[in-house]
Length: 372
Image (tube, rainbow, N blue to C red):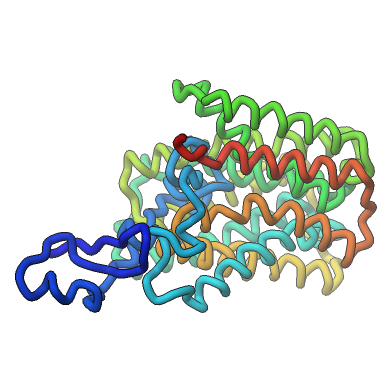
């Protein structure tokens, strides 16, 4: 099959092998583009929270999946789909930007009356069952007991350490402050990549330094006010998420598992871990929670887990990775604004300074310098 290419100076699509009359008509020939191909900027997703294409959920900042490429594909360069901007692209970007930015506030509303770990455990157990049903419908084989056990450490780090710690912390920490701290996850991913033999560049070390300065600035302002133990939880959350993401990505690559099956196994083992720890902590099942808290949980389940993941999965398969992962720059800013507008969360100069430092650090870590 002839492989199509896109030239840098135009949007003309032509086959790489041309002869005779086909060469004369190359400016009008538009072969079908496989959305998974490099032309469409597609990539494989090896897991919801730790696959080869997943950012929140743990990447090497120097990799292509980390957005280590130019953004000109979105503006009309080599990565642009030949028929212009697909309306689904706008819809999926809006979903990832707005939904994932609002989940921090939704979680804070939910944990006001619902036990945090039971709440998170229910959310990911139900979402995991849905993902498992999709995987089985796609023909995935049922995992063995050994495969389930192998996923437990990653599931626990991602959903107990990553999400569960955020849920506990947001009982007193603002949703905007939690979002800004969690934006340091790619920086921690760089630290763990260095610990496993992938040496960061000077650019990445600078990004780590700037990001940590941003966290220190945030700790001095109103956005990170809360009980000391909750502040510790929120600081540990992105560390756990980064470690679990790198572990999950490696496991998914080694096993070559179905996208939805990997996601389901991570969510279900994480949900089970959350439930066990909830029992150990003495959390009580809610009996008089308000409708508002239940609606917030439903929003997290349906929109945060299912709709958000579906949109992100589409972006990874149909756009350049740097576009799909651009939520890492947008979500902290929107989360702070949503928390202030909807819930009246306090803002201060330190909030905006920390936001700028952390978002800038993530952009520095995930970006790729142009060759001179």
